Length: 301
Image: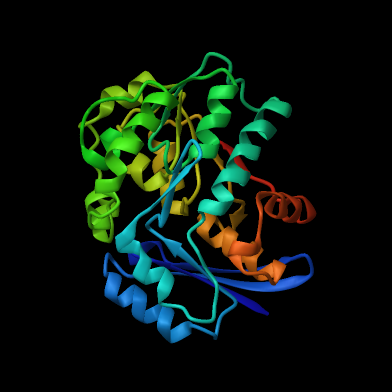
């Protein structure tokens, strides 16, 4: 049995395990949250290094993308460097393949008609592949990177503006403590339902990281479609209560929850037997095709 462990600086209340068979290989998948404790996350990785087949890093991004540039969040590097033997991934390699492919699939199978829909991507740099696919699908797509990461209540109107802001700001922002840019630990469980309500009301579709989406999600989300990644059974009940029309996750339902892209990327790395840096976008797509990777699609209301 192969063992994949997601070490997250997010809340431990979202911890879970699942056993699945993929291409004839049994996997034990675990999520271990450290409630915002980066030192503890490093210690867990060091303790399990060489004893598991792959690590995923949850609750943070090591790399963000915009256009043809990759930006490294420097405070996250100790987590990557903590493992000397076991490969470590943050999900960014899979986001640019799986999530772009997801939008294409939703169009081809006529599950969502994107043409002319208003879309709020909570962080375009965190989901650049998906962002480009949504724009190409004919959506009126806006980006919430300033709102959700920096608490500046301004929507970014297009990918060109996002790129200019990234070139200008990321050399500084990439050096800030990660918790300045993204809620960690118990902050992930806090919800302010009114602070940015107007931005949610603007959109037909809310897309991107679920921790960002959840943090400011208003009480009334009637007829909204959410395209995201990691949700628990408790999250699902909250979405139903808020009258969300449809939930789509890029990763499949495993024992009642959708694990993050970091977990699924770690699974693919473990299956391939290669180092993450040896895997290309085509390699990921080929593995996804072989295992018939299906997104989770649930009509809630």
